[in-house]
Amino acid sequence: RGNQSKRNVYVKAIILGDSGVGKTSLMHQFVQGRFNSQYKATIGADFLKKDIDVGDGRVAVVSCWDTAGQERFQSLGVAFYRGADCCMLCFDVTDARSFENLDNWRDEFLLQVGPRDLENFPFVVVGNKIDVEGKRAVSQKRAMDWCVAKGNIPYFETSAKRAINVDDAFRTVVLNALEQE
Ligand code: GDP
Ligand code: MG
Image 1 (spheres, rainbow, N blue to C red):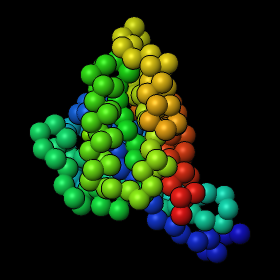
Image 2 (spheres, rainbow, N blue to C red; image 1 turned 120 degrees about the horizontal axis):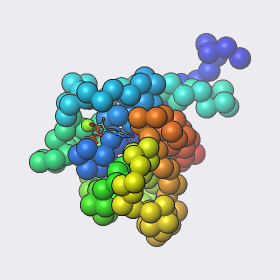
Image 3 (cartoon, rainbow, N blue to C red; image 1 turned 90 degrees about the vertical axis):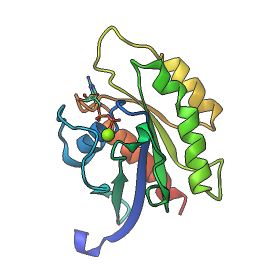
């Protein structure tokens, strides 16, 4: 079937995590297939869109919501969270503090969104910057143990810089969101 006969389904994905872990870089790598080390705190847009062919006659139109840097000093506001279908929780594998803060990001998300089915909400956890050598501060096991404890959240180790696992992480959380429909 051609694209014309495919049905669009809309998915709002939000990207959370401490400032500097690589959220904006992950989104740009996913949506545009590019890494640019020059992003500053703000990107101007609220979200970027990308289509994912789900392979069952549906095309997921994914809007990725990134913060504009305000995660550092203020809450993200209701519009950011409203209607989120899935959530990517990000940390930097070279920064233990950013991993320890995942609890706070998850709690804040659940508080703001209040999903009906708390246990099965489609999260994904991303440990980014695996290309950085010799600075690993969070082991794969430690991250996976946390994910298991929080209800078997899928875990991906990524590099936005080298385009490792970025598409897989986004695809997984989007497909899980579609399953919830
Ligand atoms: P954000 O604050 O979470 O949006 O993080 P950014 O995307 O702005 O990235 C913060 C810094 O980390 C920037 O200097 C990026 O170039 C860098 N960065 C992001 N992802 C990676 C990665 O996978 N590997 C490396 N080496 N650096 C990265
Ligand atoms: Mg950013």
